[in-house]
Image (cartoon, rainbow, N blue to C red):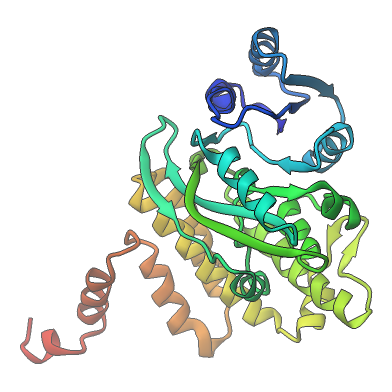
Length: 332
């Protein structure tokens, strides 16, 4: 674990570890320069559970903290947990058993429930399960939830661990580990992933999309023996788009669709403040599309005003808006 200002949720995360039915583990917990009382929560838990080994690092960056944690870990298997999420009691037992049964498996995740800041379940995330489907998914997105990951330390070390890429460092690691080991997800929902988007800067999804594109391009570059599109850890979008043979306009269009999905998710959670900020960003992005993509772009912007799962409502709104279909013919 590497935590940074997770004090509000950290007690629940550590309690979910204490309640695990599998008991033979240690917790390497690195406090990454928190100033919100996380240190007090960590100290209290370390005093009553000797399996918790706390460390403090002033250097900013989760990649360096997690690499340090892995370097001092004594077990051949590493499991991840973020300070804002919680585990179901059988998570470690079930994943440990799977790793013991399949020695060729080096990276294992699971599906999750989605919870709000109060711990209420608000949805679920189902993910690809097999090695083949996960490899296909990795070519365009991240099919793993970091707080469900169990991996072999040997495979982690073989690819050099996490790299400092500012965002999406986990996605980059999974892509590189997939090149040296088999991968899988478990069907069971073994963790509860906390949705706290309202506190996320509106620019973060854009930075993540940029980094995701560069990580996908980096995998292609490694396959072809070419330089990766990173300059001292910073993503080079131009280099990535050249590797993938994607135009900047196509990238903007894909980004628009991603932002609309985030806005709709916020609407479905009734997080209207965040949804409004995302809508404003989608409108600005839509205006930068070429003329041929403007109509479809603004159709996506309109979709940002509806929660996910409301396809019929969106279709009806578009029918009335553009005066086509049965409503138009009947004069309504």
